Structure formats: structure tokens, C-alpha cells
Length: 113
Length: 115
Image 1: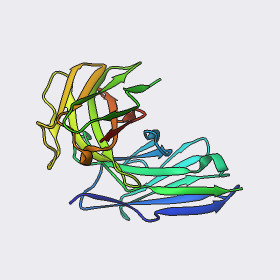
Image 2 (image 1 turned 135 degrees about the vertical axis):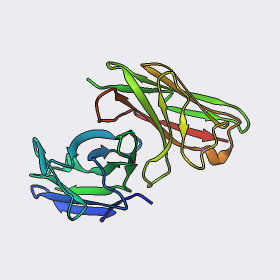
Image 3 (image 1 turned 90 degrees about the vertical axis):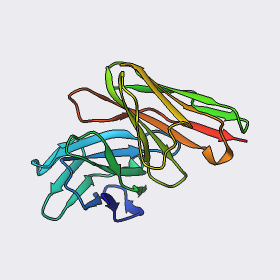
């Protein structure tokens, strides 16, 4: 079945460092991937979308890459701050029409002051 | 822009009763809306997809007679949990997508507790 895996359940880093989160997909080739931030008890907040023909996308301190050879997306937060602490979800399209998404289990990031 | 609201934000109901949750796109027209549920410390599980004016498409294992979805307008979708049981207690989240766009925008979620 189509699957999205996020390698780390939890990641702790020091403030000011770059956080790198990994998303791998299996058994399909998503046309695009999306990254979301979710805080406890809240709905996910859209951060970035990257298409399969784009290698990299940036938005302020965020950067996303899409490697179709490795079947992987990396999500980077540079100059991390304690306010960046949250769960980050990766989602890939489940079909060729981009209708529905398969969500990964998420990585809980903690930025330590 | 791209704001999605949900109402109520939390609800407690007795076993056997029905609960309706509303999802609204406030500043865009949502041609497609999605309903998810999320258990503690788990990821989102898609329950159903609804396109405005059409019947919802339910995921395998989701009972369509139990989880009634209506997407009557481009800004409103509702999820009704009928004859709720304690095992239906969960966090329900909707998302909406504008036609021609790929991004999904999520509501804040509704915490349902069935006693």
C-alpha cells in the first residue's frame, strides 16, 4: 500500500541549529508533497508544497527538497527557535489526480534553548 | 487568507445521540473538502472526501451510514456522527481545497467525547 514514513518520531536540537526532518514514500510516486506543522490539540497548518519536478523550495527559514531517485523529501528549519517546537507532518498525493493525501506519522521537533 | 473554521471546537455527548460538526471555508470557495480523524499521538486518517454537490467518497472501513457528510455549498461541509459510541471519541479535523489549487487548508479541529 502507498505509504509515507517519517524516520524520526522525535527530534531534539539546540536553538540556532538547523533541524532536518526526513520523509520517505513507498509504493507510489506522488506528484507533489506537502509539509504541515501541527501543535497539540490544533489542526495542521500548511507550510510548503513541492512538486516532483522541483528539486528545492524555500520560504523564509524553511527549505524543502524532493529527490525522486531516493524517494525522499527533506525539510529544513534554519536558525531554529524554541517557537519552532511542534509536530511536522509530511503528506504525499495518493493518486495521479492530486485529490487525496497520505499523511506520515509526523516528527515531534523540540528546539531546546 | 485561506482560513477554515470548525464548529464546535469541542463537544461532549451521550452514547446513542448524534453530533453534527460544521466546517467552513471563510475566504475561498472549497470545491473539495476532506474529513480526518486523529487519535492521540497518531497521524491523520482520512475518512472521506467530498466535492461540492456530490456524494462523499468514503475510505475503506469508514461506515457511511454512521458518518454522514454533506457538502451542500462551496463554503460549508458538515459531518454528522450518528448514534455515537465511546469508541467514536476522537479529534475530527476538516480541510478544504480550492479548485485548481493543490494546498489543503485545515480547520482547528473538533474534540468529540462520547460518554
